[in-house]
Length: 153
Image (tube, rainbow, N blue to C red; front, side):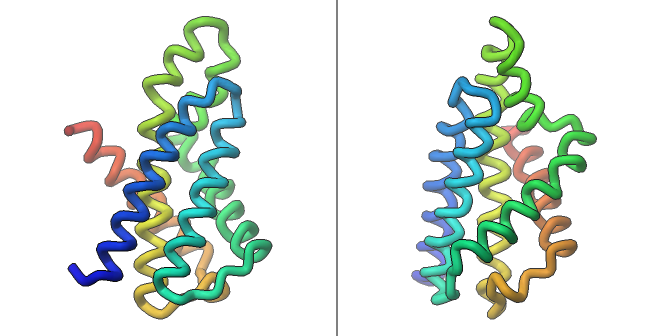
């Protein structure tokens, strides 16, 4: 593993941990906002490693569209992430259930976003050359893989 790959891997792991912590925010949907903000910052850091220009408004639109566009797919798969966040509205049981669900969702989705964009940048891509449909499918695949990996660990 070269120095660049080590930096990227370390960056993704750092933001996975931070995102898992953000998943513990007790306010419904505030946790998702924090996770999205952390994922944007992670992409900024990864882009810097690859010398890819980061235009905040453009990147925010691309990432928000990808993550937001994945919501229906993740919900139909029964993801604990969004359901876990919304479950915080339920008295007593909701917050307790989300404590178990949200950190894993946050870490797995952050891993997926970081891994897919790192691969894209490694191949010479930029935020302007992201194919939303392909990237959305790749993120969903990485998310499912990481979720399955952590479930068996």
